[in-house]
Amino acid sequence: TSHVPMGMDGKETSHAPTLAERGTVVDATDGRVPPQARRKVPTVGKGVSQMAWMRKAREQELVVGPSRTREITLEELQSHNSEGDAWMAVRGKVYDVTPYLEYHPGGKKVLEECAGTDATKVFNQYHAWVNAEYILASCQVGKLQPK
Image (cartoon, rainbow, N blue to C red):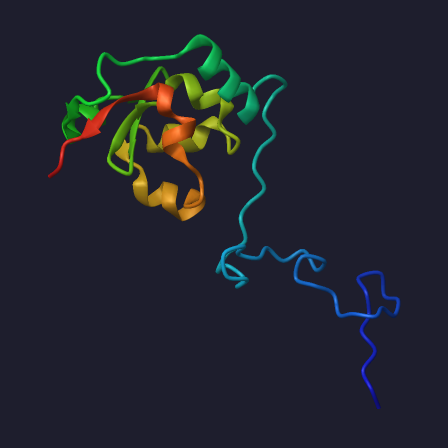
């Protein structure tokens, strides 16, 4: 007997359901299913999308720091760890993400939890393909001083 593939609706189909059709998250880089599926991100309010952030950063030329090349110590970075003053390092660059908090597609809580830290490992875990340098260019306040 031959096996007849069934679709998600229980009807016969010409092909077996794909991982995406079954609701399984697939890693786009190599097609493997990741160890844990990503959680659904919270909905952001009207006017606070990623595109709105890019527009705001471009139009208002947000520059929050005096020098983007200033070396920032880990101790200084750690002192900026609140909702009203949130800095984080990603891939060696330090950003004041305070104005970006409400625009983050994953919600501001995630960024607040990483405020005052070198968030490179967390960033790479969830956003390895994202160009943080481009998205946060207007928020860069310096470079993390090497240990």
